[in-house]
Image 1 (cartoon, rainbow, N blue to C red):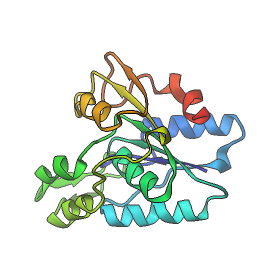
Image 2 (image 1 turned 135 degrees about the horizontal axis):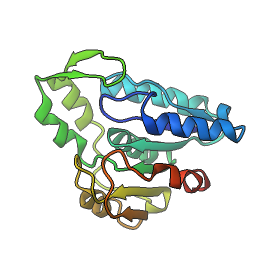
Image 3 (image 1 turned 60 degrees about the vertical axis):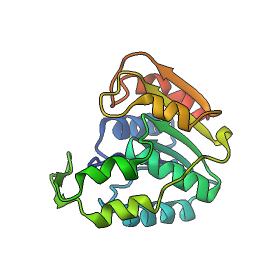
Length: 185
């Protein structure tokens, strides 16, 4: 099973998630794809993802975008899985700590919540100081990412297969071009 893990305040309705689901369905692989709508609490999101991993026939494969890349890294390390990371958030526990106390809104559902110290603590518990087996990872990054510094991901995933493309943005504008490579990996 390929599990797509969406980013912060996103959902299964994100452009990349819908594009991947459609691409898999066109190839008769709809049943081998999952993209859950994750709760905003990191611990609950991880529990939901681990349930999917446990239910997978054979080893699950992970595809994480932004915060989803942070989750995918923790899961890949914990369960020995392969992961494709699209403009992943490195050190999300530090980056999102600045949002403690602020109201957040899911872009697709409109659900609002207050990002609390508990959110930050749950992210901190998912910290992976360094990846252990770089061959398990494929990094897809665009240098024009206006949200995250792609150089952090390049350094963190050193030794992993990396496709770093000039320009683009946080949404990874060339996602469709990489669908075959994602599935092949």
